[in-house]
Length: 159
Image (tube, rainbow, N blue to C red; front, side, top):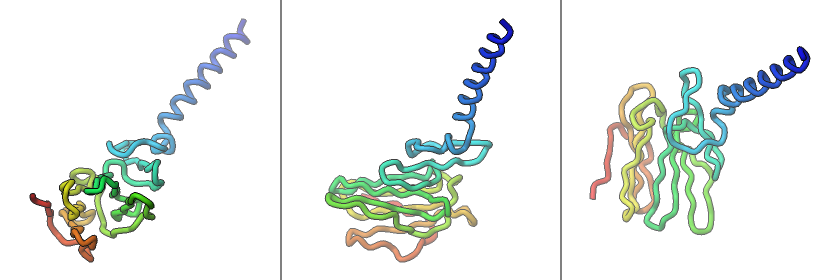
């Protein structure tokens, strides 16, 4: 009888440990979760993973632009605090491209916000500066070119 109770207690402890381990470990908390929403572990930001394209980033920093051709361009703050982007076309998908910056994922909007209209090819990415806690931006023009560097201040695309 004591052996059976000890065995059951051991099974219960193993199940509880497995459950808590799966919930409370950073690797499990950060693994393969959908972008958006900050995930915390021991009061620290946890990383998310873009399942479709690969890539680890600060969870709340993800923003997506749907182009006028209904293709997707994702922007995130990577582990190096730089803005990274990746996009698709009708026939191909880009590699992750480093846009630079030094963004704070604890900033407003997860440190990264976009301004765009679906029927236009120009858009803006705004980044909350890690060191100065100010907004910085880069603009994409309808020609496909971007500002060569981050410019101080918030910018919004207006109709």
